[in-house]
Figure (cartoon, helix red, strand yellow):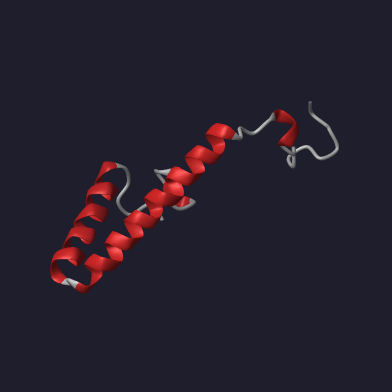
Length: 81
């Protein structure tokens, strides 16, 4: 364990920040180029993700969350308020 960096003790990424993003994009690119069978799966996954994101965006745009709808689980007895 790295005693100099407290964040590494409790977890963390092998590739933090921008490096992790580049590594993830590289792995996806290698899989899509090297294994053509994954191309259809990747396309369907991206399309489903975009559809769910669009539906959630529209849902929250036209039905916003009100303050009365939010439950305060951190202070169930009303203490510290």
